[in-house]
Amino acid sequence: MKRFVKRIFILFLLAIAFIFIISLFVKLKTFKYIHQTIPSSKNYDYIIVLGSSVYNGKPRAILEERLNTAIKLYNKKVATKILMTGDHQNDDYNEVDAMKDYAIENGVDEDDIILDHLGISTYDSIYRARNIFQIKKAIIVSQQYHLYRAVYIARGLGIDACGVYAPMKNDGLQIEREIREIFARDKDYFQTLFKIRSGI
Image (tube, rainbow, N blue to C red; front, side, top):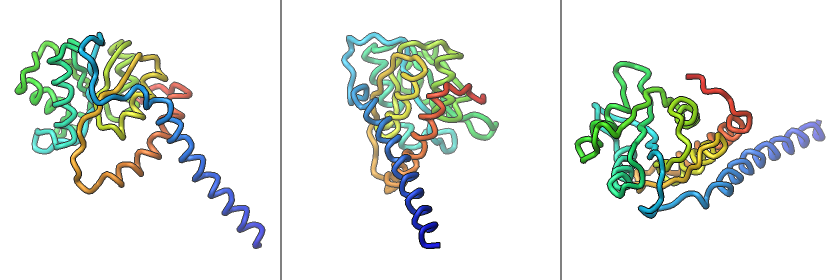
């Protein structure tokens, strides 16, 4: 019995190590593509802004910072088009229209905004950017902890991508986000490895 328990414990430790190793691998493969700023001389096809939560039709702080960062890149003419991708599965919840309205209010030409209402997850957003919107070269905007995964997916699916990270206000939830992100990197590592078709 003791030997059985010992084997189970060792398998458990190996599983935990495997989870952390994959997460670390994703970060090591992408950290050189993630920046605080991008020189305006870089010529990208699109800026991709990944969605996050909204409330009463307005972006919450995390999403607002992503949009502010994207608008700065747009104003520097790093790219002429912005793809805004997020969750709009239900009529009473719409991330992308809130993103669009915020960008227009802050000087972005509506004609330069493309919306993906079916960016339900990070993988779906990037998969659709490549396969639906035919994006081949892009800057992805999110917070730094999230960009490792997003850029890994993009490059794995054939997009010449880098990331520019938005500021992250301390709301006391970052440790929880980092833990969730470890498991999300593992999931998206395998989805990218096998180029799983988006379910959307």
